[in-house]
Image 1 (cartoon, rainbow, N blue to C red):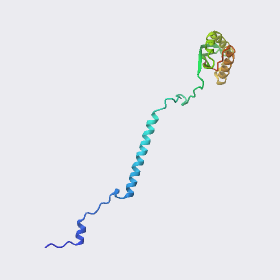
Image 2 (spheres, rainbow, N blue to C red):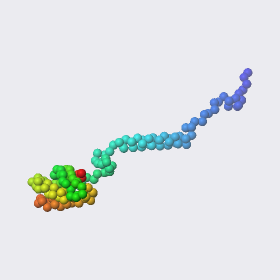
Image 3 (cartoon, one colour):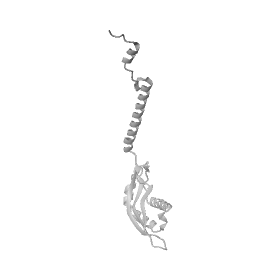
Image 4 (cartoon, one colour):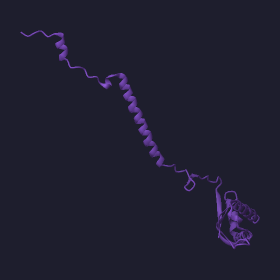
Length: 176
């Protein structure tokens, strides 16, 4: 006859329980929090790289200076007066002043009759600009010199008009 099983025999027959990492509720919560945090960080990184590739369509950036360009508030109109080449008054070395694409800017909405007047007086304006330029020295190469030249051009040219005034002069100045 078979011997009756003792308590020790019964305990030996049972498989020992394996301790699972996820069996503990604290470990489950920690795992969920870790996976969630990793998912949030990864989605933030991916979103940053995608968003950094796109720029808003209305943002204007000067690529040379990498800063925003502030557009004028008023809708300016411009009249191009062309190029000018004059000899400067420097006595020591003969130098030439070349002004490229000199344009007269004015408020086209406020001074609607100024555009035809500029067209009628274009030769007179160009002669006046030439007369002003031939009195200049190589000081116009400096920022202050350019600003003084612009101011003088605006003041003298505005004396010719009866139907408005110009507000700015745009030009590229080269000294050779």
